[in-house]
Amino acid sequence: MGKFASFLAGGALPGVLLILPAPCAAAEGPQGAPAQVRVHNVEVRTTVAGPVVLLKVYNRALPIFVDAIVAESIHGALTKKRTSRPLTHDLMHSVLQAFDGKVSQVVVTLKDKIFYAALTVNVGNTAKVFDSRSSDAVALAIHFKAPILISQELLDTSGVDVEPEGTPL
Image 1 (spheres, rainbow, N blue to C red):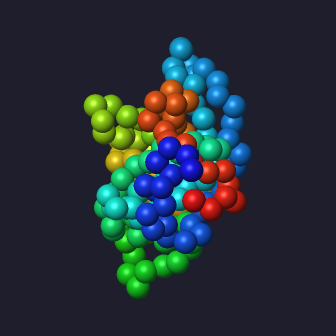
Image 2: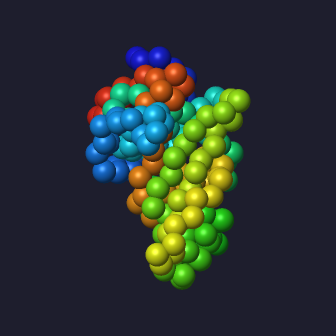
């Protein structure tokens, strides 16, 4: 088993997997910004430490621990299962769609041991970037099938090894 694989295997929400477009090759961003890679799937798992969202790029994953409500919301977005009443991410998705808006991308970063996200929203010809909790941005990206980007450096330094696709943990 890979690094932390036994820890992460502590009770997966079965079969939750979102396949997003294939990861783009890492490339240096504008003005020397860190190279970005595209997350190619997202999983929600339960562990002894609580729910975790795995942002996976091949056999590496960036684990982001979330509360149970956020885990339920992301799980619902991944499986297309609706709760009896809309959760906050469902509501935001509906509001943006009502105004012909969409999330076009999410960039997750880490600063002082806290994950942040830059959530890009497009309405008409206007794009705005909003500071967001990473879990909220990931949930909205899933709803809109928008790319989730992380730096290769963040994946290398804070990511964990996970088993390749199709290999049980």
